Image (tube, rainbow, N blue to C red):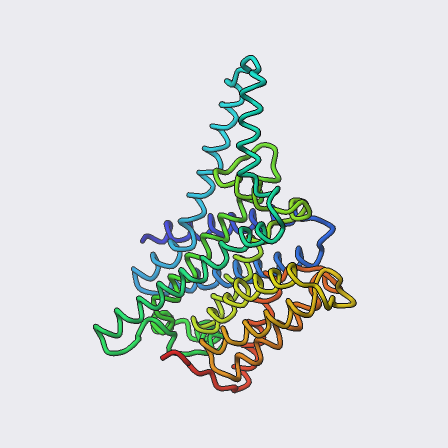
Length: 369
């Protein structure tokens, strides 16, 4: 890659990042200041981190100078192009659209069919499952890909090189990258290929959901996946941002600064643990939490137990106990007194807890292997 190409891509990427941050603040709701602050802070930290890594790649070999900048830049023009093209198509469609004569009988039949498919008219318990099912699918998909990758790599090489970062303290690893620029290629190999796969998939999902929400709130732009927001969002979420946006922002932060197994523990708690809490809570509510009437102890305790076993499967007893206690604390303070999304708080707080304790010297076991 030529120097001019490298810096052109870098500058365009920075411009896109600044545009995203501006649009995030512009479309945010004043009713949810903590969500706005957390979401913006995490996006700023991630974009700053990726920008630093990209500029450090300039000192690497030819493929390194091309590889990382292209990974972070390529999804941006693709998504922006989709937004522009789809918006133009929608505009042309409405301009050319002609209003036919109304057929009342046919319209009534169509309305009846739509009612059967209208998720908003379902029971709250069933609607909650549909809303949170994509989170579980994302978690299961990542874990299956990782498991298959581990099996294939181990059967061919006899080790799991590439599936785990060689240094489990990624905070220390990134500080080494920033202080030892000349050996950046070594640290990139240390991270392993699965780390970059995980980051890029979540990075693309985060960008897609960001522009889904931006275009949903905009009068002039459209996006092909906006029907998902219309179908799944609650009324109060329409004023701010959907939970799926916070889910991908929060877990992109976790995946960036954590090895795979702690990340799997956190995303399993955010998906399965959160679903258990809401499902048990909706079906029982015999012992409501005094300061949080929307939650009950049955849902909170059951989801904490599930989160413990999920984390234990990936990390062993010590980390599972710590993550479960943190999940319990977050679950009982969400909405009241903290009016924030658990899809942000769980991955952010769990990641910070892991980084702090790992940096302090607490042993991290790769429990599965």
